[in-house]
Length: 79
Image (tube, rainbow, N blue to C red; front, side, top):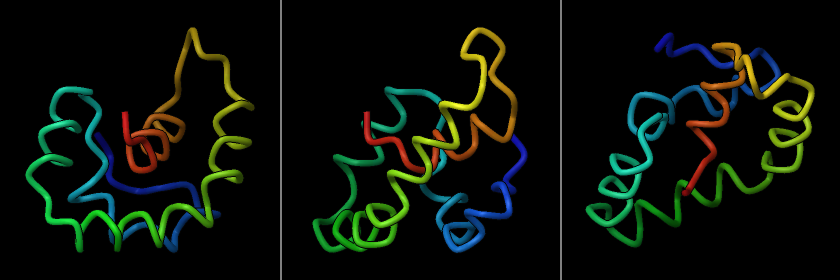
């Protein structure tokens, strides 16, 4: 996965290396193995961008996800 986010989400770029995990099980493991301080810091940065990220993702055809959509989804997803 390319680690660059779309320009409008560049403020979250520093989170990609640790948090942009495409596999749901791997995301789960990251969450349960992170401290509450790490999770809170992630939440504090991502939450203000969440509505804009959802709107951005919703512009794409889900049957053919593009890399840009996948990166922002993986970065902001907590599922």
